[in-house]
Picture (tube, rainbow, N blue to C red):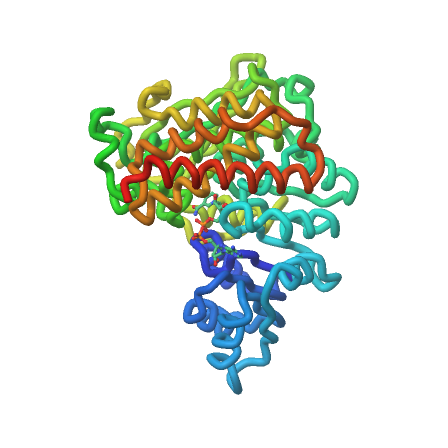
Length: 398
Ligand code: NAD
Ligand code: MG
């Protein structure tokens, strides 16, 4: 029986994780669930899964959850960052699903890493923000990182076992790998005329053609900054050089990413676009678990198509690839500016096309510094948020 903490349990990844866990009642026990503010959803999860601990974002919502659970279940309700860290590090936990969205996930995810847990990593922003530091912490503690993001999970599955055991430090060329191919659907605006992008609403941006996801990652998919963050994520997980990493648009989202080997072979991982597959893969690894996802019906698969990303349509992807090789200061800055910009777009303060402008502005205003400790990363993050907010105040639509 493995004991699991799910950070971000009320989110899209959190709920899919619980769906898979509930299919294997003898294999997992839920130690802790966490959420920011969704009391109703969290109350339901606590009543169903009966975790020892539930962690909320503030005292107020923790109080509301406590009232909702009173007399019904013995779950202890906590709140705040220290509690998130405690339930990620507890000796009673083997596995932590890191599925908080955005930079708020960094500290609890690092806490799980430092405690040597098996970390199922969905929270890509944590790795983008901290890069080498994150990998170094895992090296020191012996934590096992298993990639949940479907592309990285696909690549992981295609790599030989010896490489799978060296996440963060593998030398791809030693495993016969020429390069990795990250696939992306191109998002909901893939076929729109570029001049219509500035008219796109949050609702349209969140209407992903293939995947059902949280709001932030849905907007990131529409700008393709999600692929940019994934490019940076892949750079760290698979220790890639620039020539070992490529992005290709694949609208059908059937192939979830590929590995090109030196002998000309390409291995691809395929399946339905359903996150329960990579989640089940990480929960069961190295064994296979039933996930609830059915097989691929090849009789209805008409075509698999591919094309190169167009940077005029996806300026955020270009910014991310450049930031990746500029250094940690740039990826931390980009991640923070994007979080502010996406929130402002969702709230109607900026246009869809302004997201790239906010990110670019913040990167232009930031000087290159060595960013190899948490204090510098926090300073860069805060400074980038201030710069992004300044742009939005000056040029935003309302
Ligand atoms: P979501 O918005 O659906 O859920 C986010 C979760 O984080 C919620 O439980 C929320 O309560 C919690 N949260 C938000 N802000 C918080 C804060 N300040 N403090 C503590 N908790 C907070 O997001 P999601 O789509 O499930 O994505 C989660 C992570 O997984 C993201 O990093 C995303 O990039 C990554 N991811 C998601 C998918 C997907 O299909 N949804 C695929 C790959 C990777
Ligand atoms: Mg992905």
